[in-house]
Length: 235
Image (tube, rainbow, N blue to C red):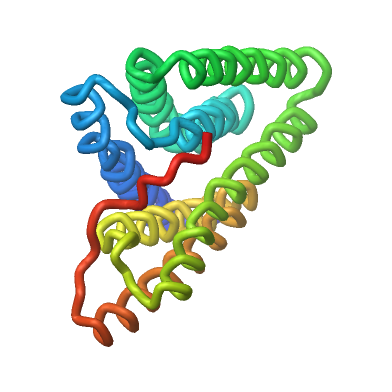
């Protein structure tokens, strides 16, 4: 046990890291807004893909569930950030479905229903089949797997930057925000001694460092800035 004063400082630092992570995550959540302004303006999803928002919604729901007090007490800031994220992703997916052509509309609608069905199954199984300790382990493992898969998505951009020797499709502010958010939640997880938080976020931090190093290396060589993210569709 820490002395009262040390414990208070420890708790304050932990909360500061979590709140910082929430703020930086909010920056990431609003980053697709220009894309959706374009979709609303043109009344078309063009060549944009809706899959990243579906994946992000599922990830936010799973991590939100993990952060709930009856699953993992003491990490409520994980629940707050992912509840906000889930709302943003749901709005993005809804807009995408409204303005997508019929094949994409049907596919995205089916995926949206599947995401909520899977979340309901996870919630039911975790509450009905496991005791509190096993429940936390089960949901924690799912959240780690979900976060690692999300953090793996920048590997495509990293590969593209190396191949093209250009940072055109890797926005600096997005890379920096991702790195700082991952670092904040890594610190938060360490303060909370919660490996289900710090393990995936240390991976995200490392990938963020790689992106920033690549940005510095290739932008200094070419003297170019980044533009809009790549618009290729993966539907």
